Image: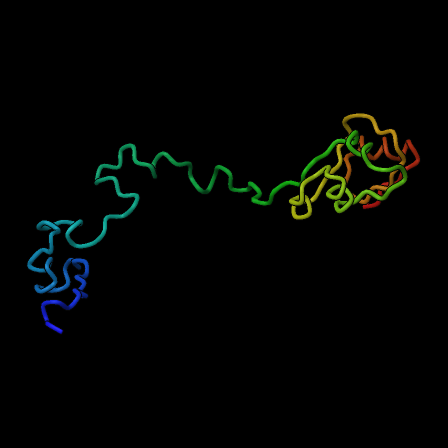
Length: 148
């Protein structure tokens, strides 16, 4: 075996700026120019220069006012009473029943479901979900029950 026939296995790493004179990009300023903020540290993400006339920060609403009392919690899914006609007569209506009959998606198990009074109900049902006043009235007029 001859030394000039051996495969080449050496790999050269990337240049690491500012880590000494032997790093390939060492030296006095390490390719960062001379003086100033960019030579000394990273410039902040929101920095737009010293003139703050129309900067992003100035254009945003104050944290203390707008949207302070807004809830982060997601509201429950709403379905109308007319969709309950797809269920069998005298059945118990809960989230599992609605998911099984493909009236709502599986995400309803996380968010919850509320029944609203739009449309006409024609079946007697036992509802174990939150309902609006109109929906409750329609369910009870047909002989059904609302249990919460």
